[in-house]
Length: 200
Image (cartoon, rainbow, N blue to C red; front, side, top):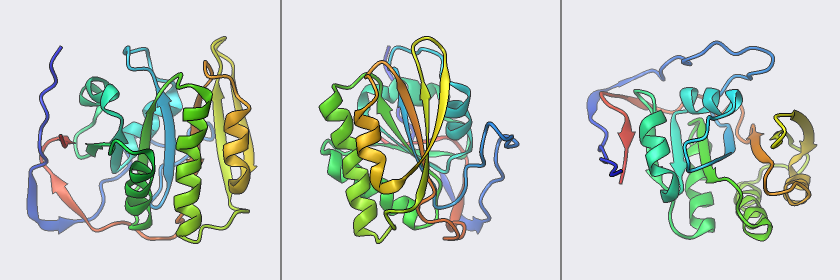
């Protein structure tokens, strides 16, 4: 199945950020400016977990691996900008952190079931980029695990423990990680988008 990549159509007039597409509940936290969400998703079109779907619906920016392009093109809501991740993991991490630091809510969409070493390296690249941006190691992060048995577990941890926690989970457990890296950064200066912004 081929994917048509659509460049964003942007009006010149700047507008306030669009309101969240869904109303957060205690189990679905708000997707806020300056947040970085790392979400693992299967390329085969398997149903996204509610938290992952919620984050994709409400995020301003989605950075995705090319293997997930079909999934993103079908799931991307109106007004969201998305672009494929650079081939190098550290460059993708840098791009994601750059958007979050500028006040955007960012989802970094990763393929599910990566080999353990690759999965941990990608998370460590995000940790390194955030550390370079002076994000404190004691910053709280939320990790939600989605087990193959359907059991969901929420873990509250410190940012500097993130990579080791990720390494401790089996690869068939999907992870959603919420890092409130630049809370209070304020909303980014957004533009109206007439179509979904899937960059190619």
